[in-house]
Length: 260
Image (cartoon, rainbow, N blue to C red; front, side, top):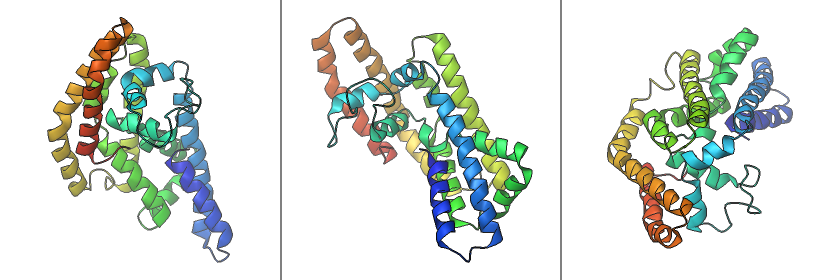
């Protein structure tokens, strides 16, 4: 479940509990239900595409996270290498390490664009209330923060670890296109206030990036070497690299001040 779906569920519940809700609030809850549906379709359309799991496992350090043995529970419920089996925390952690932040924004741009095309009145209602209706503003600011924190250069760097060029181009191109669309639609909705009008956040992100870009490059180099050794059956050599891999996870998480 992504941010729009969670918000829609909360809005519906609040509407039912508040009998004195205004007409715009009722209309907004219906618009949010549709927006959540559109977003879910776009998000599920990506992650349910055949071989997406292969892209994910190569373009993020999920295998290192699984080997880290951190947390109270294993990263996978039964041990199967599938999306259904993967727990939410390592899923989000892996995307943040690779600077995609995928679960925080993917589908929002497609949902807003579809709403604008299929329900212009609904889109205008969102535009009218995005800054005054707290649940909507909270969701959109979270999405815009994820969009701004996502780093396209780093996405391409981590994407370079996907050995199948066709697979890499298919999914990386799709993700980058949705990232651009999401930024455009958020700015369209807010007159550029959501991403362009947040100078303090932009400054914080720039300061962090200056310090951790080298860490990302080192992590990718380590990942390539570690995976190569594993593929060639050099288990002892690969095992010797694991402490450095775990150190890179911790360093990047500290630099980002987040694991997801």
